Image 1: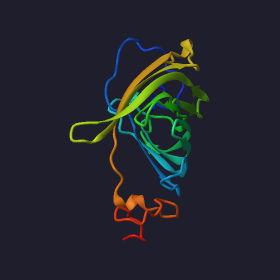
Image 2: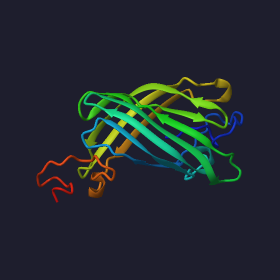
Image 3: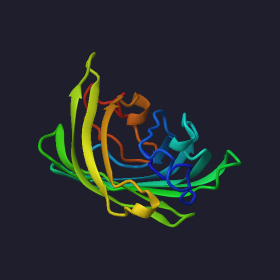
Length: 217
């Protein structure tokens, strides 16, 4: 989840009248698309592409109010025991509510996990965020776990929980100090057309009936 201060890239608005008031709803929607030439057996993955942020928040305090776009890039090592790397996304606002200031935001997710088994891992995946308009950094430090199981109907489901402390916490700006999150992510199988690489690489030919490469069809 993206957790920039309410209203997007703008300075502190002062303490709320009721600091214990809560807001429930949906935040902005982020869509990222990557192009890569990784093979199915590669452990060091990379990708470059674009990322979009759409103002779908149901409450003004839960989103930026802007449509934003920018570049995205990732580099991740997926070993048998360790998962580590980085995923960078940068957004610049191109439209949206005139009452909201322009956005220039960066998010860098840095997973670092140890696999207890093929289904379960321990570690962290903090989202380090930089608001380039205000110069504000958000740096969470913490720990958590994730695992994969099958839900009703046999659909794979990834779930987990993480607890973070914000090293960039400033009490005079009413910044968050702690963050606890739980996530449930359904895993949707890739279509057959996505299993063959466009720029080379991709699944290696196994020369049997289950292989879908152009040489075995």
